[in-house]
Amino acid sequence: MADETQDYATTIGADAVFKGELHFEKGLRLLGKFEGEIDSEGQLMVGNGATLTGDVRASSIRIEGKVKGNLNAKTKVQLSASARLEGDLQTARLEVAEGAVLIGRCVVGVNGDARGGRDIKSATRSMSSVPVAKQKVGEAATVGAKK
Image (cartoon, rainbow, N blue to C red; front, side, top):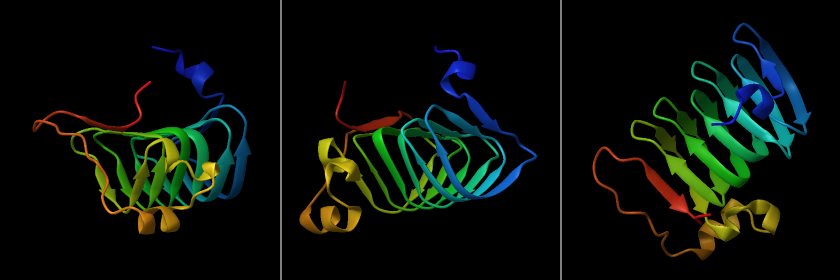
């Protein structure tokens, strides 16, 4: 397992409330509340107990808390058991743990990244069905391209 201090060079603490636009190159760990827009080539982690309201574009996104907004991750989105996402998401790979809540539309796969030229509205209009990985009750699901 990688050292989290290296993975997330910046932390917004549990007692912090931040509104606005946020841009960063490396990783950000959100433990407090954020409202606005995030645009990054780095990775974002929304910690357990944290809330994010707004749209996010990042390389990868891990959610343990609550998010209300649209997500676009170039490589992957991870939803832990405590995650709650209300919004649309686009990513190349999606990992969902048992207990996670997802309310919204998903575009997952090689073309799931909007940076590749498709947005979620045009992508969902062009899809007749999305393949879903079979899983047993109690197992986490992984959807999308494997590396």
